[in-house]
Length: 209
Image 1 (cartoon, rainbow, N blue to C red):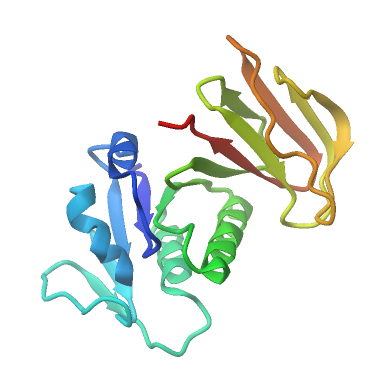
Image 2 (image 1 turned 90 degrees about the horizontal axis):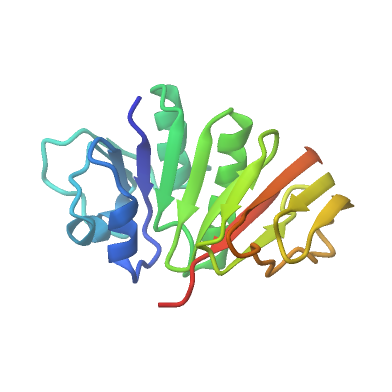
């Protein structure tokens, strides 16, 4: 099935990197201000969702879901729920990190929600790829400059890291002590992260241009 790409309104600087990550058959959902990225991404919307408080509602024949401005779900959360309802199994989130920190943190929680629904999901910004590590092992290639593991959802125990400068065996990372920042993959290897209990946010940081 096609991958669902959800585009939010946070700033994007490196469009070239993001365009390289796109697939010809991706299903694009633009969320309100995410429409500001359409021309630079070069991808037509398959669905538009929003309350249109940060972008004028476009005059288009593309399917559009207009939301009220007073609601519990953000436009991005609503778009993800709608895409799950439509049966999508894989997600890429763009324009969801940076700018207002409350929106950024909310969108990181959206990665948790998608993982809880059994979906494969990642977010891509100018600096990194973000994804959740839970039941399945997560590889980290040595093409990344650094990688970090952050606890954003409670207890995370039985953490193991192999193939990295700072290995770990049966560790625990708590929300109030984030010591898993700025690890490095050993040259020529692929690091591997596993979690026995709980979930972690994996941040894979690109080399500086």
